[in-house]
Length: 368
Image (cartoon, rainbow, N blue to C red; front, side, top):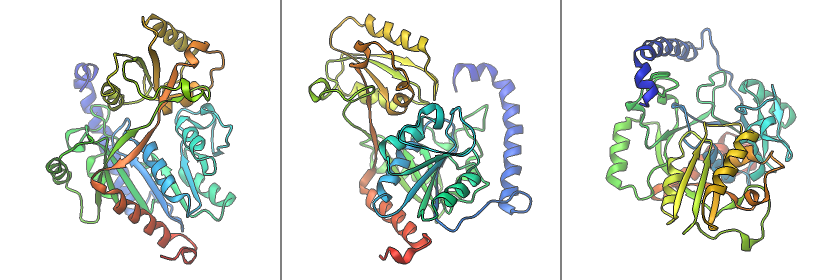
């Protein structure tokens, strides 16, 4: 628990009890389908979500699923488009900005321009709009919709951060849980994300035992693999892109919930120094922020220096056209991809592909 929460604990705890009680009633009403009803659809709807606030890796795992399915099926993604300035249902184009659709949908659209990407805070309406416009869609991926129970996902993938086990946390605002940890029962697949690359088998077994997953739930472990630096603002010549970060002084600019995995990765690259400039999650950068970043970068007293940011932050930074050239040519992001531990990727891939193939509307078109 952070310092602010410790100070406010006597006030936050009773609020959490009230909020938790409301969430229990809401979930029971949806479970009974008596007053609150969930819409069901005839095509596979795969939900990727979490129970804790903050980053568990929803977007990289969504991208993993897109990459897995896009060659054999017509895939669409739907998210609310967090912090976008537009309203209602909106289809992403290759020219959409983070202000229009949100940073995560923009990132997905840039990586997979042929994939249908849409945003709508009302997922039920969003799915109906997608099926109206694209009746031949095979599967819809719902990004961050585990608590959006107006839609009954036909498969739910629950992500749990390795460093934030559910059974050691509490309901908001005293803790970080959006709902009771027992609601993990709704998941078909549970992925423990951001696990150490060299996690021991005994530790995996301990985590799986503590998790107390149900027999119908499959548990996987994933980690992040960081790629080579990519320019945030332009396509630089190959010779101007560093092969690795060894020896560099790094100004690390982040606006994500948990930058620790990225910090750990950069530290392991034998950098000379890391100067962290940490903003809140999904921070909308301002002109003043850019000026502060420029000042900090210029204050680093070496010629071998670089600015590193996350791929998600890069989406929100690309709107700035008047950034100084010395910043532009030295500002990079590190792409990430999901890697499953212990060769679990084959089992996971087969489970997802078989499910979509079996349940898509015209399954006979995709024989086993």
